[in-house]
Image 1 (cartoon, one colour):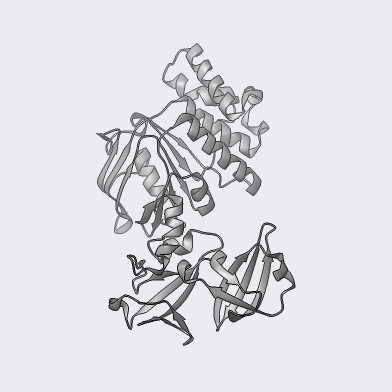
Image 2 (cartoon, helix red, strand yellow):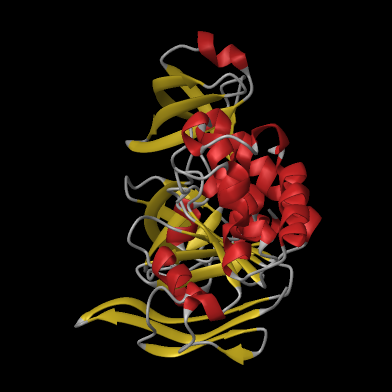
Amino acid sequence: MASISIKNLKKAYGTFSVLHGVDLDIADGEFVVLVGPSGCGKSTLLRMIAGLEGVTEGEIQIDGARVNDRHPKDRDIAMVFQSYALYPHMTVAENMSYSLRLRKVAKDVAARAVTAASQKLGLEPFLARRPKALSGGQRQRVAMGRAIVRQPKAFLFDEPLSNLDARLREQMRAEIKKMHADLKATSIYVTHDQIEAMTLADRIVAMHGGVVQQVGSPLDLYDRPANLFVAGFIGSPGMNFLEGRAEKDGIRLRDESFMAMGDVPEHLLGQQVTLGIRPEHVVLDAHGQGMPAHLDLVEPTGFGIILHLTLNGLPLKVFTLDRAVLQAGPMVAVTLAQEHLHLFGPDGSRIGGTSDPAAAA
């Protein structure tokens, strides 16, 4: 396996820029997930690493060697696509061994590699079948097996689970994670699904508008998002945002209500800021001692319940495990715990340091 280093990588199509200078170092054996909305540049970045897209500016190194001008087949990487890309006239075994046959690997060596990969992925009963006789999840496992037998320096996954239903996605996430734990392979995985990113990644690279917004462990991004984009994108249901103006002892919200927060950084006084709080950190007060909010909508999910409230004219979501709220009236009382508040400045970036109210979260 190998490390991957990306330095000031830019991509443009004519005058249209897609990537605006990406810097990223991926350690040997690390599982990194590129996550972001459609059009953020994550798939373009993956395809540039694979050699399927040219580099406008910057450098890509794999295992310490510059690969900008190398053909994809010479980069020693394996890519798993969303569309499976299996040969319909070949059996599962033939699909998995195809790249080895192209490299003129001995038949017995290729057979052992296919057997080992099929055992890891539970494909042994299907080796003689053709793709049309397989389910979507089985076809995706064949595509993964085809990558495994090559024993590449790195695995690249381009939204491989997008075509599967919810239950199969859950199953395949677990299989991909087990595969990585077994192979300890350097892996880069692209998805727009933040649940996939949170459950699979050693580190997440959150992207938006062709720019890396934050890099860190899943819980780093969840607990201490670098900006409003990361805060809103990571987490389901998404973080609540309350806009207001910074005053000496707190935030004057848009509806003129006041949220006491202790000392606010002096450089923010009088400026427009945003408070954030995750739905699970909004506390329902059974004794009615909190702030009154109107209950607009109740969404039972089985495990928990999502409440859509209006607090002083502002929308607020709550996630709770207490099923008693199913019998709640039109009004509930809520408390926003100060230790779980996140503060974002006028430019949308997180306000850090000891004065950050979220630092204790």
